[in-house]
Length: 158
Image 1 (tube, rainbow, N blue to C red):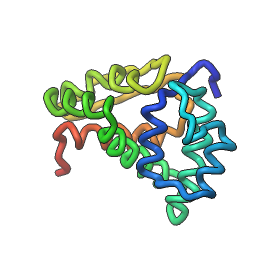
Image 2: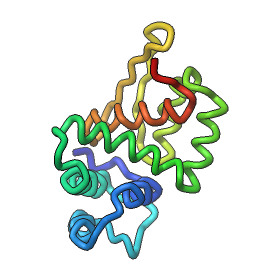
Image 3: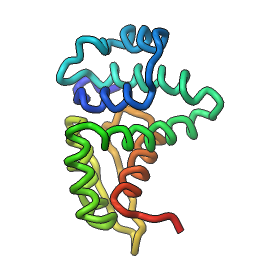
Image 4: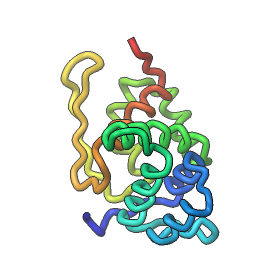
């Protein structure tokens, strides 16, 4: 896992909001390097990965790994939009709409991760390919996050 990727505390706040950790999960977060009582401004990616894994084990035990991480991604972004930074990003997504939001995926992710190396390619109307390079987290979580963000930005199923 690349050690140079850092994760902003806002994303940890989002994870705590969605997971509602009991004492056992709090202990796992602490073992991974995240102290809920003394949050820092940013953390190494390995700390967030450990907290993600603990959340998946506790909250999504009945799902297979891919479904669990995809669901985590969708719920994480919903929770993110409840944070102060997330509210600002969420308003921008709603104003931009899904099409323009896709062109700005890298900018959105940079509000919680750095460095960010994301390429977005339009394949056709409402059809996009997003490549995450050096992204140290499960691809399913990124996919769920993008899906959740696009829904927040106005994309409708159908």
